[in-house]
Length: 213
Image 1 (cartoon, rainbow, N blue to C red):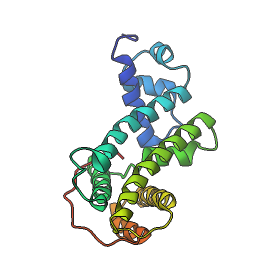
Image 2: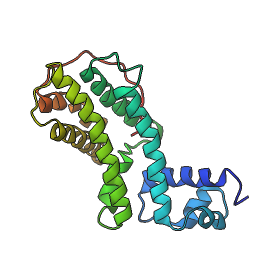
Image 3: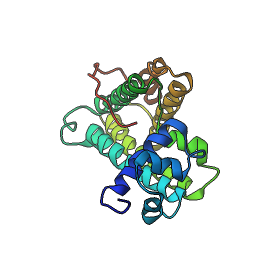
C-alpha cells in the first residue's frame, strides 16, 4: 500500500502524534512507519529525510493553527468583537485545547512549536528558520489586534510590535510551564498578565472552545 494516496497523510499524522508525545530526536523512521501502518519504503517516497518530515509536520500543524488564529483574531465572525475580546478569545481557546488534551492523554502536551524550538533550534537550521517564520507571523497577527486596541484607547503601549512579541512570548512561556508541571493552572494568570503588558483594562468572560496548540 506504500504509495497509495493516504500513505503520506498517515505518516504525517503518526509523526505529529509521536513528536507531541515523545519529541523528535529519539524518534526513528521505523517507529513512524509502524505507527502509520505503512511500509518503510513509503516514507522515503514522500520524504527525503526525517528532517523533511519534521518540516512537513510543522507546516501542517501551522496550517491548522493559523486558520484558528485567523478565525479568532480577524475572521468575519470575530471582526465585530472589540480587539481585546478577540485576543482574550485566543487565550481562552488555547487553554481549552490544552485542558482537553490533558483529559485525553493524561499530560499537558504543550505547544509543538515551543517544544521543537527548545529541542531542535540549535541542531537544524531549516527547522529553526521555519519556526522563526511561524512565530513572526503570530506576532504580526497579534500586532494588528494590539494596534486596533491602542487606536480605540483600550491599550496604552508605545511600541506595538514589541508588545505583540511579548504577548506571544508570554503565551508560549505559560504553556511551557503548564507542560513542565503537567498542570494547566499555570495558565490561570495568562490573561491578567497580558492586560498588564498592554496597559489595558479587563474585558468580559468568554466561553472556551478548544484551539490547536
